[in-house]
Amino acid sequence: MIYNQWYVVLDSKELKKNKPLKIKRFSENLVLWRNDDGSISCIHDQCCHRGASLSCGKIVDGKVECPFHGFLYDKSGKVTTIPANGKNASVPESMKVKYYKTYENYGLIWVWYGAEEKITAEPFFFTELKDFSYSSFKDHWGVHYSRSIENQLDVVHLPFVHKTTIGKGNKTLVNGPVVEREGEMITFYVNNVVDDGHTKPLKPEEIKDYKDFFYLKFHYPNIWQNFIADKVRAFAAFVPVDEENSIVYIRFYQKFIKIPVLKQIVNYFGKVSSIIILRQDKRIVITQIPKKSTLRMDEKLIIGDKPIIEYRKHREELMAENNK
Image (cartoon, rainbow, N blue to C red; front, side, top):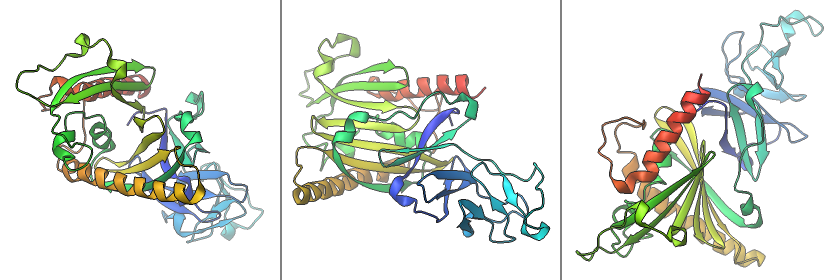
C-alpha cells in the first residue's frame, strides 16, 4: 500500500443513512455510517472494550453504539459513553479506536490512508466526467489491487483476452506504447495493428504523432479513465481489500444521449458491455501468480509492457517517499 493517499473505497449509494456498514479495506475491518446531515464517519470495526464488531450495532445521535455493552463511539473513534458507568461518568482517553478521514463527491467515497497531518488537498478526480451520465457496477477479484490495476495498463492482451469484443481484428502488433508521467498521473498512448509478417512495431521513441493514438490515464493510487471517444468514457476504481483481494468499480460514461429514457437505455447497455469485457479480464487475471505485483519479480517483460513497468516504478517511488 502507498501511504498518505486518498483511496476510493465505496460507491456513495452503498452507504445508507443511519445504518452502519462493514467493509474490509487495507486488510482492516472498518465501519462507516452516514448521519442525517449526510456526513460520513469511518472507524476501526472493533470495540476497544471486548472486541465486538461495531457494525453489528446501530447509530444513536450520530454515533455508533456497540451491540455488546452499548459503548458509544463518535466519528473520531473515541468512546463518549459507557452505559455501565453512568451517562455522566468521564471516559478515559485510552478508550478509543482508529478513525479515518473521509471525502465524498462524484458519487464516490474516499478514505485517507495515512497521517491526517499529511492531507494537503481533496482527492483527485477526472472532473470532466461530471458532465456525463453513467451506469455502474462492482466486481470482486481474488487478486491484490495492483494486479487489477495492471490489467487496465496492459496493451498487449486485447486480441487474445478480448478477441470477441474490443480485441476483434487480430491486431497483435503493438506500436509503442508511449508513456508520460506528470505528478501522480500516468498517460499512455498505443496503436495496435495487424501483423502482416513484414511490418516492425515502432519503438516509443520512434513515434512522433503518438498523441493521435488511443490513450488511457491512471491516477494514483487507484483510479483510471479510458478515452473511448470524445463523448464516451470508461472509469474504474481499483479498491484494495487485502493482500489477495480487491474490488473493481466500473462506470460507463456517455454524453451523446441526453433524453432521459434513451439515456438510461444506452447507459444500461454500456454497463452490460463493460461487465462482459471486465469478466473476460477477470477470468485470466485471477490465475496470475503471485497475486500481488512488485517492481522486481520473476516476470520477463517486453516493450509492450512499458505502462506496467512505469506503474511499478512510480508506485515503488511513492511507497519509498510516503511510507517512511
